[in-house]
View 1: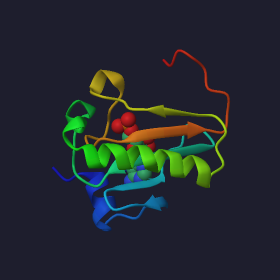
View 2: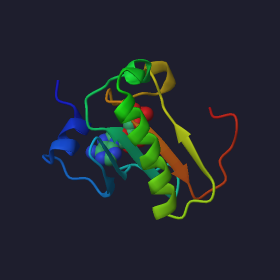
View 3: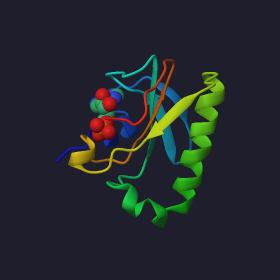
Length: 110
Ligand code: AMP
């Protein structure tokens, strides 16, 4: 089945990019849950965070991208979320980190 985030990576689907790095990209979520809602993804199609440690270059660059996004958008407080598996709300089976900011975020999440 076609992967929507692979289509964003290969350019066949448009996205509002915040950042493009060698192995990672960041773009605005199409259905934002906060004033700032950015997705950071590895270009490589990795389905689950459980396998992410196998790709240390991507792991490091993804965390660098979170830092870059926070600086670029001047985010003072933000939350990083990974939904892993259907019961956690993962709808797209291409690993993605959500960055949420710009409003008071309640805890614990639902
Ligand atoms: P999750 O529920 O953790 O799998 O999150 C998937 C996220 O991808 C949701 O917040 C969607 O709004 C977002 N999304 C789905 N398709 C697109 C797209 N084409 N461009 C940007 N964000 C998308």
